Length: 114
Image (cartoon, rainbow, N blue to C red; front, side, top):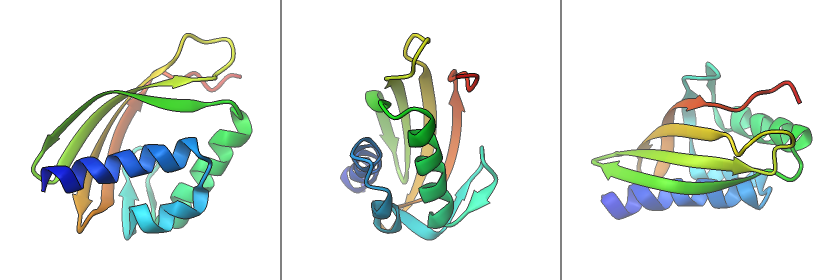
């Protein structure tokens, strides 16, 4: 299961960096829940990614660390291409079900005043 969980997280970051918003339907479960945003479903991810890329068109996420245990993966990333800031850091924890991300918790040092 470790490889499947790791692969789901990697697919998510690859799609985000490629601006492949449609891939969310294949990466996240239909009942996906984001604890930070309080949203459900893949459409919420698509909207969040679109809004983020509109605000920061040059942004790309670099995975710095990834730890997998059971059906859960913790990922520390840096976000490059955000003007006026050192690369912000994000810490995200995903729960994976049947090869797709089902739940997300996260913290970020990103300032949204840009």
